[in-house]
Image (tube, rainbow, N blue to C red; front, top):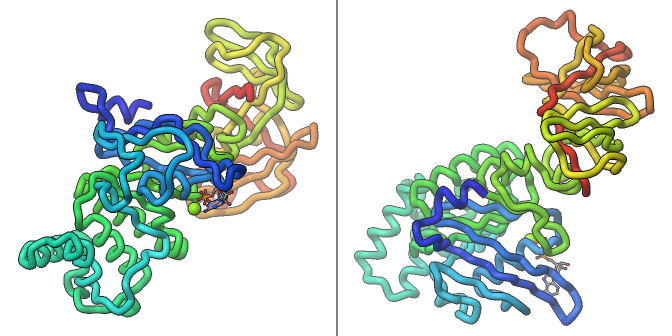
Length: 372
Ligand SMILES: Nc1ncnc2c1ncn2[C@@H]1O[C@H](COP(=O)(O)OP(=O)(O)O)[C@@H](O)[C@H]1O
Ligand SMILES: [Mg+2]
């Protein structure tokens, strides 16, 4: 995890350390299964996974709303596993925002500060600073229902960081917003978080959200981490079919290792010979999966001259997305692969059409060989 090493301080101390944490509900539902994780100061760490995989449970244990069945949680070196929620320098922002409907924006932000007994002037000063930060100064006296969804989300964020927590927990922070608003709000949220420099653990089931916002992320399934790394590492070097499949679109070719040398390997699948530009894990004859992302494939009418890393098929589907066109190519075996071609020019002719025979090619560094 490169991001971690870059941020960790000299003593190797991380802001958040989770050691072998499990949560078993009612003695049988294993919601979180032996999770170990380190998050450095300033990171935005995303927990990504499908519904019911244990994301919220893990977050609630960090907040102190649930007690781990097993394992320890450390914050800035201190064991906080048994510390009650209100004593933790941690704040959680809920998907529903949980704003007080009868309180103004200002009073919503001030609520926690007043409850902590902060002096009146100090509260006013902090609320002003928070309003400026989330650009809601002119809405200070409005009630939550008089704001748009995106503005309510910013009030909730301002309220969660007003007490300057060491760790901010965000459970599906953009879940209540529609697709278009989510994208602009993601960037706003990211800017605010970076400005205050608070360390975040963010839960999402949306892979694009995790990729856009996170410095590091974990892909979760059935309570456990499948892979932890930077978004780029997880996208480009998934460690399993499940991770490759979960993050973005991918073509998977089932094949057998034909050759495995120090500096190259070959895998034969039904439709092509894959030449991989480095040695791989596994022995000759072993069954593996070759993962190839749609944007790493080039389509052409012309037959390539090389003997490997290409296949031929028929365009059975195409969809124009403006910036790129997505093609489905049916191969001899019946397998259909996806190809994404950037639309570099405004030329409408000369491209491929439905029913055309086309050759797909890719480079020897475009594939990932997966053994599980
Ligand atoms: N309070 C609870 N009591 C019993 N089971 C629970 C409780 N909360 C969550 N679960 C179960 O734990 C698993 C993980 O849930 P959750 O952490 O909410 O997943 P996610 O946030 O990833 O959707 C699910 O099977 C869920 O039904
Ligand atoms: Mg959840």
